Length: 305
Image (cartoon, rainbow, N blue to C red; front, side, top):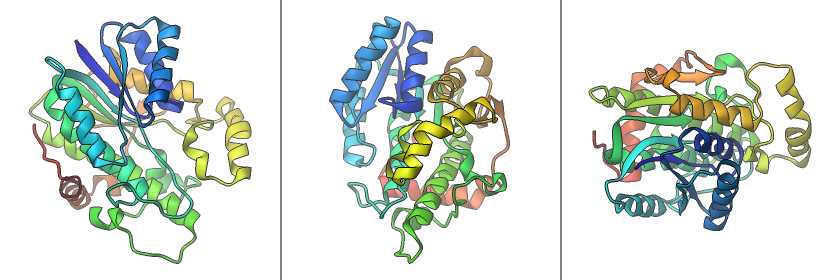
């Protein structure tokens, strides 16, 4: 049986994606990784009640821990004839408070949003179907030209992003920049991985959910901003483009990954239901190579085509 893996699916966009996927992929196993296995099992029951899907499971996974990622991958690999048709790297954090670190000592935002997703992908690649699909959830905040309210990214090197120097800048500015830079890294990984898989039929794409108020990304915001994020910003989904509810964004993500309509899209960035160009920096080959090589070194993983 083919398996579909969706990270960050215990809430928000990921949950809505898993719910939609359960409605579309009736004959495939859907795996929902979760840091809190109790929460994962509750989501499984919720989706099962809504869809009647019979092959739902949750496994423990903490993307802030390379050991947890290895254990998750090893447990999956013990499944008889494991075949992964879709891997959706959707989990993410946005910390605009004091700097926090992963179990392995990486700056948290880069460590979870990029290195965690990268390590998981490298370890699961040997089990991907030849016509499988890998998606990285990114964000329009990666592109300074779009002038989003978030600080624009600055790519330095994988090492510097993993182990940032102390700074006197305000934590909210630094935190925003780390988030947008991690989303830039998701796109550069998409392009580099697709190039390295060009002899296969595996397709690798990046997805922009747009501004999606109501998700858990605002947990480190100020109380006023959390109130606006939850109660005021959702109204904008009725009036402005590329602002979506979690349900809309989750459905779009599931459709990109599963629908026959998009089965020929490879190495692209999908935003507001269309293929669009990404930032100037995202196409920088030097950045892409540095990120790729640095990420392999930092995560102690290898690339297996």
